[in-house]
Amino acid sequence: MRRLLAVAAVLFVLLCVRETVLAAEPEELLEEMDFSEISSFLKETGDVPVSFEEILGAILGGGEIPYERVGDALKDLILAGLKENQRLALMLLAISLAFSILKNYAKGFSGSYLSEICFLMCYSFLMVLLLSSFSEMHETVLKTAETMTTFLKLLVPTYCMAISFSLNLNSSAAAYTLIFTAIYLVEWLIRYLLAPLVQVYVMLEFLNHLMEEERFHRLSALIADLVRMILKAAVAFVLGMNLIQGMIAPAMDRLTENTVAKTIQMVPGIGNVVSNMGQIFLSSAFVIKNGIGAAALIILLLLCVMPFCKMFFLALLYKFLAAVIEPVSDKRLSGGMNGIANGGMLYLKILNTCLMMFFLTIALSAAATGLGVGGS
Image (cartoon, rainbow, N blue to C red; front, side, top):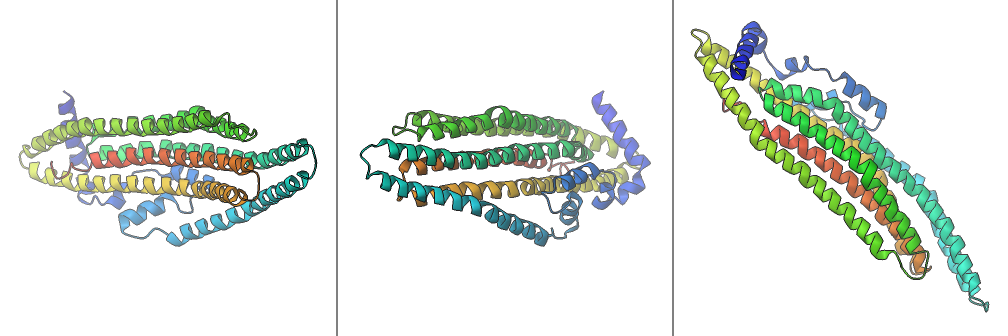
């Protein structure tokens, strides 16, 4: 019954709009899709210097993405980040050098408490600056994850509609489920599990280097390993779901598509004409589907690249300062700074893994539904 309804629906559509189908170019079919919400959202974020329509038009029309605008935006971001972090770097260096001088001066006194008091004052002030900067990285990760998931929530209906245009109805439903599964998985993992774990890791590193003996070294290492294991498990889960659906849903669609094609060809008089019209329509639909998928991947990359660069330079600054002050200052100062830098690297890994999960979901769903025209 379901196949008969599908055959009847395809016959009705192709017979009623045969002039449109005969002229079914990708640009004309794009007019049936609404990207206004996506464009408005990207304009509000201000993180993407190009619109979704510009990228999609460049992909489908053979044009070029405005790389100059993207390059200028990245250059401005890097210069702004360097200028913003310059003051922080100078303050951290000044505090470390001041402590080194005070420590050497305190050695001339008989008691050792003065040196320890100097360390506690410098270490506390240093950690306040670092933790304040680290909280900005925390907010950046949460905001970037929210931006990516909101963009995908707006994209999913249009993308799945493009998949259904190519008669991949089962694959369209599967892609809808998989993308939303990845969205909610990323939202829950980052907000309620991974980001709090990284915060606990950083606080343990702070306490670990506050004392002469590193009492929390193994616990902080365990938390870092746990974050990495959760990220690997999440990628394996999303990849496994995509592979399973990629084996089942496209096979069901090929069966339905072949049944529809055979039935249309059996219609006396117009069977071959309608079948050829259907091939033109399906070819355009596949071009649009893959174009939307490719544009979505580019947008996701642009949404991540600016926060990623900002966080990367900040973590790299912490690593660099920890290496510079280690020879001239107390090892606990450089150790605490290095611990916060490792926390920033964990945030970068979280952001990179979330982007990878979205890439895999969109790319694999596009690949799984990209073999239908030739087999009809």
